[in-house]
Length: 116
Length: 120
Image 1 (cartoon, each protein chain N blue to C red):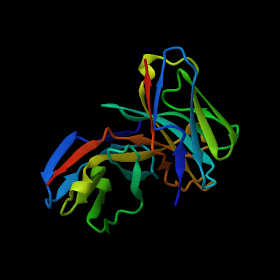
Image 2: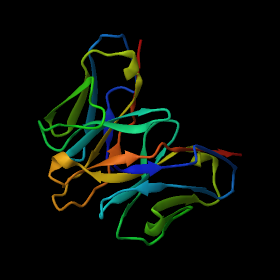
Image 3: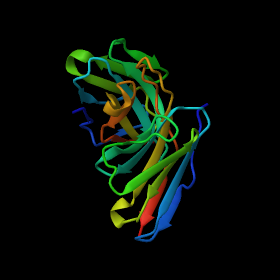
Image 4: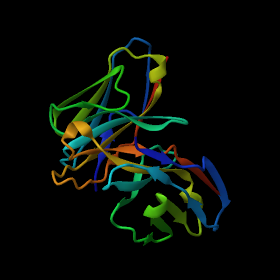
């Protein structure tokens, strides 16, 4: 079974703090993704990575950065947390096929972040 | 741009009723994939099914079935004899080629989800 884990289920931070959200997958997947989920807006892609040290912006990258130093780990960083970053953050991973076959993305349990 | 519409924001049924969740999509890609995910109250998105655009056969898995109709750009999901444990938010998603990945990778565009409540 694919296992994607996230470091915290719930997190409370203060405005201006630097926040790290960690994601680890144990299936040797090349691709990893960070989404945020907000009521009425669904899931939106923040950043993705398809290789170690590779990162690409998604639809809403402003205010976020990422780090992928090892294949199994993908970190989302809020450089200076703001209240509008209060949200549910979901990490996902998938295999990569150069042929274009699109593998399923498997998701972690999510981190509910509250910024006060 | 890709778009996924789940017109039903909330559905409430009584246990053992059948229920269909609608999904309509828009894409300009000729090859694409469609997905359904379930999100129970615990929050984790659970993968249910993946379908590619060349395979229009309907699929059945236990009480779940999916009806893919390319002509109407729809990928509907039916739960037969619903149970309380089916209560969750259900998301339909469409793959979109990631331009920065050399055309070999993709992201998912999600619908806004349908909250299904199954009452005993």
